[in-house]
Image (cartoon, rainbow, N blue to C red; front, side):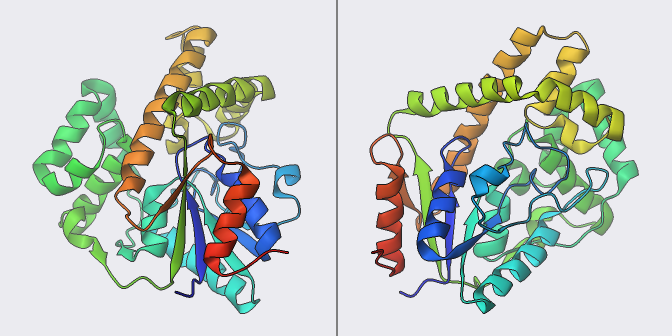
Length: 308
């Protein structure tokens, strides 16, 4: 099969950025991010945003394109990232989609179609109040009542997507699960999954990454974001940022907050793996068994490009 696109997916801290950049260097490619937090400006340390040194001159797209004051939808991502892929193909370059947001990958490459519904900020605030008063389980139960099929696919902790599903139902009068459709994928994709054969290896990588974020100034980044955008931004409720806000509120000490980020990130990695394992086309590589160069050369051969 002739492939159009390479997709590098997997859990957080599995080395997707490094592998995608190496592949781009070998194949003459450009990178399209598939990370739902990297689309926002100013969220750098807590999202492990790649710096210029990590990018090594390789063009990266879909990073830092929206203000955190606005909500960036999956439907918009599919449209805009699709344009970037087509532009890369027109340059006779190879698009490399890299990231761990399963919804983005499914919409962009697997044919998932989602309704383009503008955010209803008043409704979102109402749902956020529900979470504050009654907890995440109450929010998830609300979705179960209106759209059990959608609720089954979303973890109770994934309040952002649960609120989005309820918001779509509120605006359209139809369950999100009925509005989501599958169309024929627009590209032939070579899917590459990164994981570890020993789960503790991945967990240790996650723990070290969180400590590195703290060393690089995550606490000060969150302070600056609060000053600039306030604490109502949906992104402030996501992994890493939420826990530091709770440290500021006195819910945890900084040490306890760091441990919670590590634990929550490990749990998030489990959910990412569960999501991606549903795609039977993914070619899995274990980063604790083979080197990055070996992985890249194996992918290049499978793509049909034999490096010198």
